[in-house]
Length: 234
Image (tube, rainbow, N blue to C red; front, top):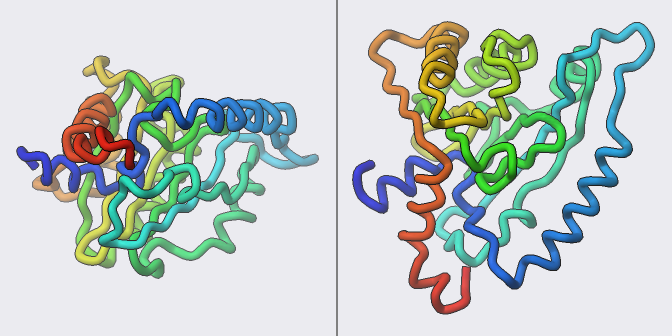
């Protein structure tokens, strides 16, 4: 993980396909912002007698063909919004019909982020933040993912508005789970997230947990794909 290839692998958690936006994408990004504003106007609300969550959340799903250069794909085309929810009951209606991470195949990711935050490094809520990364042996992803998102929805991390979202990434030889926060420089907050994550996932004391800033993730992406970007590709 100390070289460019390792750094890229460290970010194989559902988000490294989204390289820095280029000039050719500005027009499309503007359209996306309009779409996002429209989505905000139509924000979901808890139903009668439902139990509201502190924040609204959105499920996303992405899948990429392994071996295909990430630089040739648009991240926005690769990630699909499943739906948003505002209450405990609405969450379970989505979750009960979703495939568990352990049953996914190939190179797949589930993302659960606060509504209005895209699971991308460059999103305004994410760009100064980072993520805790935990690599799991096969067979643990479903349980860990459920424990993580229930803790997140239940505000168990106790760090105010710092939590942005969580990702579970299914890969061939291992699975990866991560939780994103807004402020990478706030060491007290990142430490609290780490300790809570260890507790809610019931991780063994020797479990390796790595914190990586999104700035470092972007730099690793740029370094790795620099020649591709310079030639106008992606």
